Length: 426
Image 1 (cartoon, helix red, strand yellow):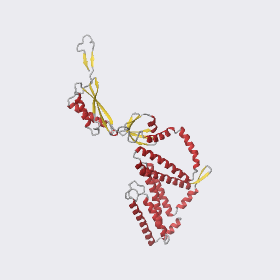
Image 2 (spheres, one colour):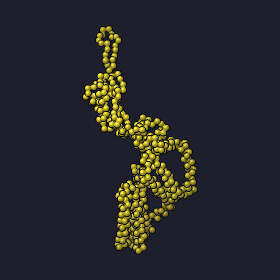
Image 3 (cartoon, helix red, strand yellow):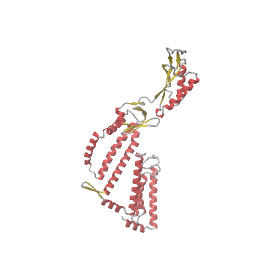
Image 4 (cartoon, helix red, strand yellow):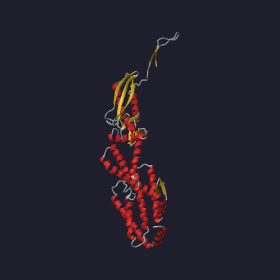
């Protein structure tokens, strides 16, 4: 239908036919909403089919476009149709927008690029809907078909390129949707280990994206046998220029499969100590208790020494050292130190804090207080400092001396004319 047909249909519409179309449209929309409401009662809010409020999912516009198109075909037999035809194009645009928007939000929840793609798809879908409604879309497609680009000896029209890009985008989005659904519905129930679920999710997404890309290229018309040359070139590139990148990717899958380190473990890598928050295919994120985050290449975790502080025991040991006078009661000092550690709620009661007389220092008796915590990711100095304050207050209250460093300087001889003691304390 061209623009003249649209104006003719518009001129033939009367109030009675308009009311019939509006009534049919309201009935189709209401029926679609009731169906979505019925089946979406117990669905999660992140559901792609139903969305947060039933009507903002993919199923509502999909049912609406099917019911409206059936009503349009039935009404077309006995009167001209305009409103239902416009509604079909509007709902069809909503289907495309919801498909891209809901899938990208679920797969890439914090990506700004996904938001940009979503807005671009929305504009393209609404422009196409308006052009189709007024009958100008065939003319625009014909003009795009006349614009050709040369690639060597082959010429490809701009319309073919746009349709191929759209087909590839739809295939990739559907592939991401399938991967996300399998990960959510199957992997989370089948795999309780977070690291194994991560590697299974990454592998599944990579395989499905590869299959989807091959289908998309085939839909565009690309000869897949020509990809063998590209595969050979890619292999040479990996062998020379991308060795480190390939090693990091392989190391990421090895770490996830071996589970030598897992998400949530407390590790120490090259002097940087923190908690593993995520394991990517190329790097691992290690976060300290003070908020600093380190990006560690996966190859480093395979080839270098890594201290995993959470593999055998989740209890984390901390210690503090105090020196008291030689005339102090050892048992009393030990009790004060242990009681000071127990004043902090983060200190574990099992194993209980323990204080040892570890050294006879030049200035006094040296005690070491050992205590354990289960949440080192929340910080260590913020629990050690109040314990030191409690130790200091307890020793002062008990009258136990904390000696200053003392040194004895012996003077063998004095210059003539000077007198005094031959010893001085510093």
